[in-house]
Image 1 (cartoon, one colour):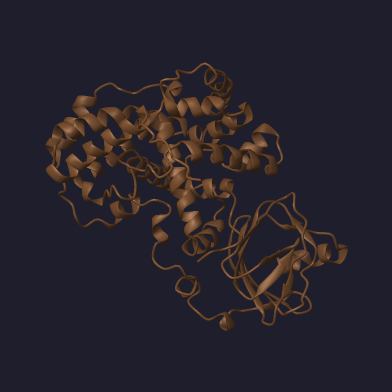
Image 2 (tube, one colour):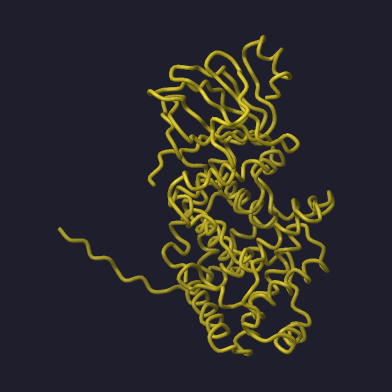
Length: 197
Length: 230
């Protein structure tokens, strides 16, 4: 018996990812200023918001972003589309830069920032239940159990470690680990598997 | 190399975000250098992060979109594209957490660079019958150890105040119905009580990162624990 696999149409996430990669290749191969401007506009606001959510002061976040975007313009040859999509490469650059800043300035979230972000968790988790279904990634997130969304939020948006998640939620570390494993399993099956570029 | 025991997704995520305790990084790097499976998982964690970023996952945190054109102008008018081809710092920043390790799938090439001497030359200290310890690094509550046991040796039954990551370098040990062999990473935390037993014909040597002190069942070991510094 043979099984015929239906050809999967690219979803909007894949199309956007391909678009960003095409823009970065044009920056790399042709020093294309308009492609760079478009890529910057697509990514910079989201990256700045993310850095601030990790506890970084707004002015420092803007400086870090600008330093990273200078690298994207002056060293685009470091990008290899066979290894990662443009968004993943730029996310990696900013994540690494952020880790450097953490280490060099012992920056830590203030209690107030943490409190405000923790209040956001419930709002965020509730919002994902009615989120726009035009975004395939959000579709997948909205199907995750509430407790898995909560942990993803704390890991990715707040930059917390698993121990911090465990202490903040008052859960055993084993429970946090198993919820993380289940959330990643679901996301890996549905987001970007073998579709890095 | 196909390995039987790998770190949890949670520990790989902490590693990827730079959130692991300090000495854990060395043990994880060593395991990941030998484990394609973990390198793939790290890339997945990064890909998921970038997809969440671009798909409004964080948008409720606010948007920062003013002055974008002037910021872009600053860069494209101020710098030539591809102008700097000699920056090791930028190269490091642009690496995936999986990239550092695509050198060699064996542990052999890695350890001399960490230890800069042979196992025999390490300052081992006796820690019970047929067990020796050597503390390599201490950073607050985070410690890095080498532990060596003769075949048949039993480590004292213990649990932890924090995470413990053990990477087998040589020989093997058994613990909770599993066998850990070179390259395998054994992850334990506060909730696990265990007692590794060295198996096979040769000494077992492991690299261990601990966060916080060990907790022993045996009252005598609790008494001498401060002297051993574990």
